Image 1 (cartoon, helix red, strand yellow):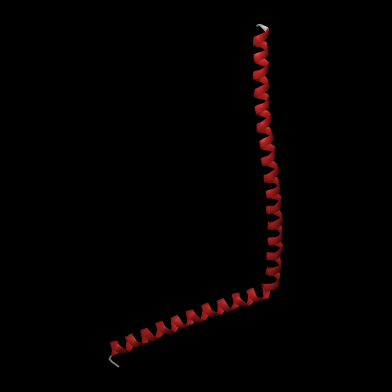
Image 2 (cartoon, rainbow, N blue to C red):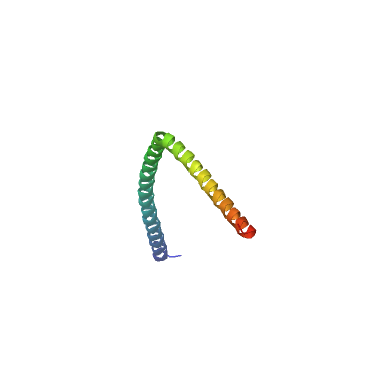
Length: 99
């Protein structure tokens, strides 16, 4: 290998190393941006979870009352449906008996 070829090889290797270095720098910049973004996301998530927990504590009694009212409403709807069914059966029996 002559000295001219050696110099060309060294220049090519140097250019390749420069390209690799540029890519690594770009990756580092992206990683830094993504890390900052992730930290901000985690901070906001923690704030929202804390606020949600406070709302759960604040409105727990209201939720319990709503659950009870929903249950009572379902019972009343069932009772009305049963009453309607009984009235319908009673009317059918009266018609069949001709009364």
